[in-house]
Amino acid sequence: MSGAMIWVISPNSDICNGLEKRVLMNSKFKNVGKKILRRLEVSTKVMANTTGNLAISSEQLVYDVVLKQAALVKKQLRNREEEDMDVKPEIVLPGTLGLLNEAYDRCGEVCAEYAKTFYLGTLLMTPERRKAIWAIYVWCRRTDELVDGPNASHITPKALDRWESRLEDLFNGRPFDMLDAALSDTVSKFPVDIQPFKDMIDGMRMDLKKSRYENFDELYLYCYYVAGTVGLMSVPIMGIDRESGAPTESVYNAALALGIANQLTNILRDVGEDARRGRVYLPQDELAQAGLSDEDIFAMKVTDKWRVFMRKQIKRARTFFDQAEEGVTQLDSASRWPVWASLLLYRQILDEIEANDYNNFTKRAYVSKPKKIVALPLAYAKSLVPASSRKLASNEQHAFKG
Image 1 (spheres, one colour):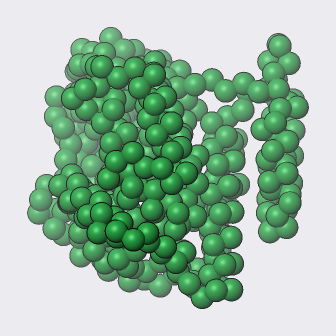
Image 2: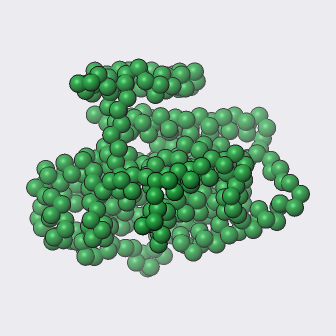
Image 3: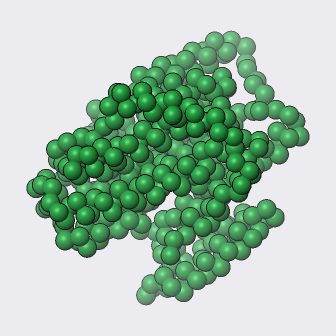
């Protein structure tokens, strides 16, 4: 895991103009859009550097993607109301149905092998949603394996370029292999946009280039690329409860928060493992403020300074889990269990780090099988709670901090 990027655009860039057009053309987003633009204007004055360019925070950039995904789902919901249908009708060419079913079955087998708890939860979903989420899971796993798998040492930027080209082909109905065919069929039926998939590939590019983060803004962007994107890919598949009173973009924000929380938890769990690879996925400025450096991490000794630092990092991860909880109950009732299970189990990893006295150098925090068994019925019980009629906090409140 690695990577960070400094984003610099001019105040008159297409990003600002494009955001204005996309947001303000939709009357439902008008008030939120105006607030965003006002904040961008303020940022122009506050963050402009000596060259006259504007440094946009990672959260602002990510929020633009969130708005686009939410708009797609809103469009689907409007179509559903007009046509009374869950997903687009399946159009199958003669002789292809058997191959497509085989492709989805293979995706299910991969999910069952590598994500047993999540796979179990997907069995409660409708057949269409279940198959689609398997296809997305497999594509994400294959993408991650490019830089973390057995052939990672041979992966080059050109290889990732080819993988992105292949992604574009499958979105255009030209899958390369059986597993691509499953995802190609999925994106033809659900309002799934290609941008989060491309962003995940950018996360893999980061892993090839960088192994340090100057601050949390850089780390946040990386966490979005490699994990937050999964939430944006999944919401259209999971579906939003018809009784939900939450704004669509707020549900997306909660899904994004869960991905960020999970990745931060991965980072905190794997500090020792990453250090042995010469990588440090922790904000350098916060390490310095705590009186720590890379050398302290490579020494792999738990000190009082390390405990204080880790408490702050764990608190931040839990804050993102709390944000995620706000949106899980807004998902379609049949889709909540796997999400609740993921949330509860991953959050327990933070508890285990604390139980290990913050020794994430030589001890790997994990949730024991008995604790998993206890968590599953709890997750199921939470999945039965009806969608809240109250409105969630706006995405815009979470997207811009300070």
